[in-house]
Image 1 (spheres, helix red, strand yellow):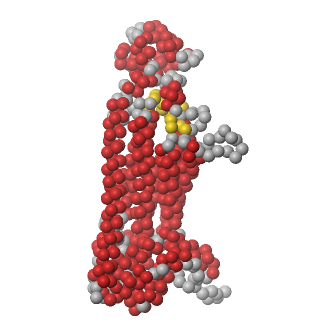
Image 2 (spheres, rainbow, N blue to C red):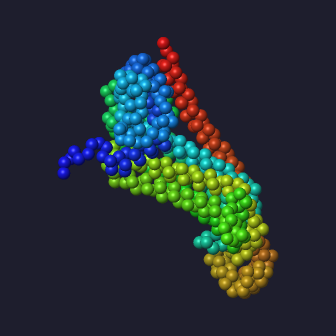
Image 3 (cartoon, helix red, strand yellow):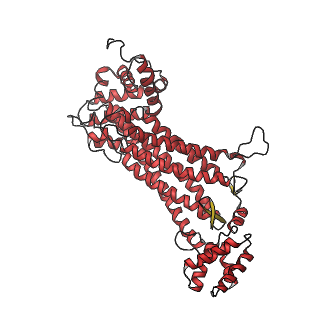
Length: 491
């Protein structure tokens, strides 16, 4: 069969690859592409590579592009991708001689990597914003319920008394670490690859630092080969996202368990429950299920990004480009939805603190403190104390505290251990259990207060970083607009 059986693009290639890439670029990258065009035109002029006349013609042409038509255009194969369609339309408006000079000292390679980083940095900021809102909700719950007793669970079994505030602050700390990872990741994503060109830069005297500033980057991807070939920027971002979603999914699972009739710890507001089409009594906490599946989707999508990149050559490859980027965008979109949804649901939720308190004092949950009390008051080893208390628990017919204390007291007397019933009774009080655990990180009121103060300050600090970063990007865009206007307005 002849190698010339079809002309480019072959119908199958057009339908299965190029049409999808074109639609994805329309949806995800058009604004970034046009910002890059503007910044590159300004830089070429300031570097003396193109005349003011050419720069002005290109900038006027970019402003005159019909964005709605570009967004809604149907791919027909007359151009390879959105970049070439923009280039063609720009030539129609500004003239081929001027528009043809805009691509001096650049490649679709460095344009693409710049677009990807610009979109990804915005996605990171959106995830951080949603994460901060969830932190705010959980911190408010922790503050309101800092002293409300509840059972802590290990291995899905009731373990020890704690407080609802203590539990919520654990998740607040996880979200704080998520923020640390997001902020650190942003600093590495927000570096400018433009100027790397195909992979080895150019012989033209371009100014990469200028496009860096005009596009809001806070540094360069210095090595041009790495600027095009390296994928650690997106791998790190997806790893950070997957870590955050893993934690969020586990938290959502707890909230779903708490919402069951058997637990009866958590009740969502009417706005966040769905009824059954057949069972009139149902109050289904469906938003928590959606949170769980969205978090799971985002995690697996992020993992799929890494899997798609594994064992690819360290070079310019499509594996890290056109077909991969929509998966990155989907992962971040699903994660943002999950974070926003659970924050909304919990902001209106109520907690059955009476049920939690009752459970915190049942099932012998405070007996760790009974063993500790024996150690502190009598000087016996913890192993001996544990053995005594364990035997009393195993012999108990019910979890009646008075009967348990009586039996344990008799066992201590028989063992020659001096301790009063009152001391044992106090050790079985869940409020005493919590109050005595006042070291750093514990559930006692004094320890919780310092945790809440720290986390409140940290939340404010992270919000200030987010606001400052958003302002910095806005200022860069304003500066780009000014530079463009100065060139266009010059006689």
